[in-house]
Length: 211
Image (tube, rainbow, N blue to C red; front, side, top):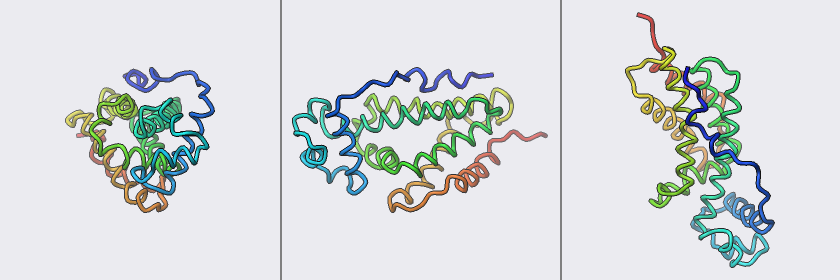
């Protein structure tokens, strides 16, 4: 059986590091501002004012405003990726693991709109994001799902005539399209209902059928 930890985020897990109080204030200030405004409408002066620090302190800890955004996203990804891995422990069967990952992914979007907005809206329009360390972490985050799919193929639970990567992209795309409008307009997201709908669609196409 393929070890689902092999290409996961665990290699990036680090012991918690106590951050300088000023850095924490800056991060929390931007998170608060993102609840009310689009990222591009927020200035460093506004972040500094909200945090109760000088603008110079922002540049002490971050290259620029966008680097601050990427660091916030990375912190969220570390948190959620570790949780996803823990959630999978003790779950038997690839399709059960995939269902759990879909639910956890949607639940993260439903309960943390700042994370959802950053990942789905704010960072993807800039080419530099795809060269960043944060994007490398996003790929590791997605590999948790890929490993579950590859495990299912290896065990004969999932059909082997469709690329595992295509299956992963289809599932991730379904999650994002189902959640994006609700995130933009700040509407309720139901993880249970969406998980049922996406699994019904996905599993009918990827579950191996007996002849």
